[in-house]
Length: 356
Image 1 (tube, helix red, strand yellow):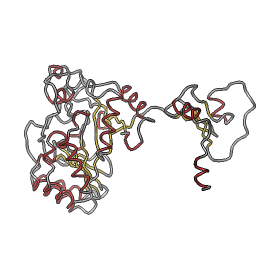
Image 2 (cartoon, one colour):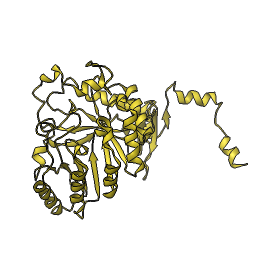
Image 3 (cartoon, helix red, strand yellow):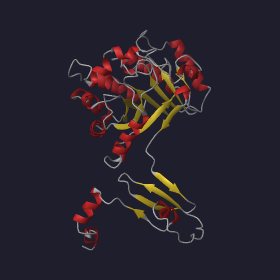
Image 4 (cartoon, helix red, strand yellow):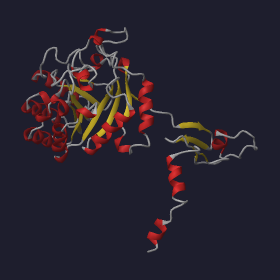
């Protein structure tokens, strides 16, 4: 929801064109992911061996300023024709290795329900297609679109997954929460794909609030995308290091179900590359040294025949962990250690419970 007609309002900045969009360094291009190069038939992107993406429409309920397909979205609002859909089905029939199709756009939920039904029916006619995923932002921008009729069509073609696109807590309104509830209650799993945007959601605490609210709505945080190298987004882009910093903050503060995977969709069609903090500190033939979210270093013994320990050496530190001489190096101060000390050592409540 736009709360102020001001570029500093996060939702306003994602929805309304700004002068910043006219500044384009040479590495920003119309098709940064080279999807057009991976289109064996018009409208179908086949990049990964087992899945393909169908551009079903060029229409959206809102034309996001960070959109990676702004070369197509909204320029000529249309849906895939019957002739193009037949080409897509023929290609899928001839490539049984494809078991997963993502229906995207544009926004598929902007199409009439009967048109979406026709597309899903065509995809379900391909025996190898196990999973259909739909990418939509109408949950955020036009939540009233989630009608009983639409839900019935989605249930008809199960298994269908719906991935939506919340970027900021202000986008979670009673109406969007209700749209999510209707889908999830109908047995349709939901995920969320956010884009990391400077001045919008590149704050660790704000991202934590968004993720907590998504999980509360039963929407699984799926991806946090580094902003693609598309024209007009330089003012939105953050360093990759900022995303890693946010992921470092989230780990240990949120349960795993609430933590998305931070990915860079690589230029030149390289695909999604997961990026994360480095939790492997060192390795040896016998041990792997790991770091936790607190900064604690632990020595994990690997299986196999353990060679003889080397002669004692006054090295200390990580070397002792990697050689098995020590098991952990703990931070002097941590909330967890403080709780342990406050509890006066090991708690025996479990033993007491078992012995009742």
